Image 1 (cartoon, rainbow, N blue to C red):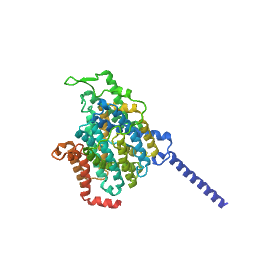
Image 2: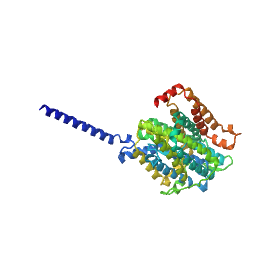
Image 3: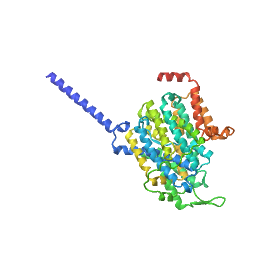
Image 4: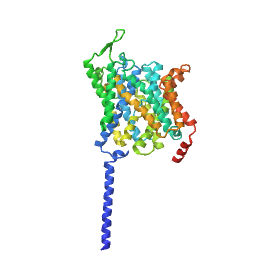
Length: 497
């Protein structure tokens, strides 16, 4: 009898244990899948989570193209009126394709990490310098494309040798580079805020009103709401700017007159004709801009690809630490950088600026901890579908510069904060303060006053002038190698190993 009771008790306990294990497995499969990179997530859950990522990067993915095509004066030229629409369409298609490669990998290409890829804003400063030296126009844009193809292949090759090079890119160096990128872009954002410096009504009350309205809406939604509304605050701010601009067009004069008596359409006016003329569905064109080799573009862009490889190391480390609670592996970093480089070369074949990991989405992953690959892939597929719709690309291309500026000021400033967070990831020491101070002092200082290089050869001016990102990156890397580690740092590193 006693044996039977023991047997019965054991059977009941075993049954309860099996039941609990089944419940845990069921809970993991249904509730925890979004927090697992390889988790099986139902489509009904994956779609909104994927769209959240797209909303976070949609505007930022297209902003660099709007700025650089504007600097090349392609948008306002009759001959290239439809080119900007084609490039915006291609930008969405390419971002979706390269994101899928990053998520699922093709051989060594792709890190299999929860990263969204998109058009990099880090190159804006260097590209603006190239445009300034070459005088703008379609030839300047063609030179940028050729430089992006060569630079992308170069970064892809660097990815294969990441393991021995990784020690040169600690968070201190990566953070300094990201910080210098953000600082160099703030002036670009404010320039758009005023309507674009080439606009006859630059700095007008209408432009400043639109920029301020968009910025205020973004701040209120970002910190006054939660969930999807907070995550998509930039997109909603842009939509509010569009609506305000349309209403202003019905109430205020849309034409101005210069001091010379020449009439012009004000920068904040929406050109709806461009949308009406665009088709509904179209297959993106390969090589809409013919690549042109020019060493004045190749050298600084090639150096910038080294810088963006450092930034990608930081982004991948950010999502693995913030979203997965572990450090990134060498394989993930190597595959991510190879995808970064070859994806950028692929983008240039479609006339699109370099595609790299998107820092905005790194922040979103860190905040939500949602790293599911299938969820992010649904967002990538949505981007590809958007790339087949010219009317959507045309609608984005007519965005007033001041509306763009209201969002750009916020986005570019957030890059500065990302850099500061990376730099302060570890306690600051006299050595780290020296590295950051000298790198930023020379880098940002030269970028703000490039005339200091006026007596040096033109090649040196082009590489180190303009944005100041390149000198800041090189100085940070060199000082990190040359300055000896302090005693505390050395002990910490030894303990980690």
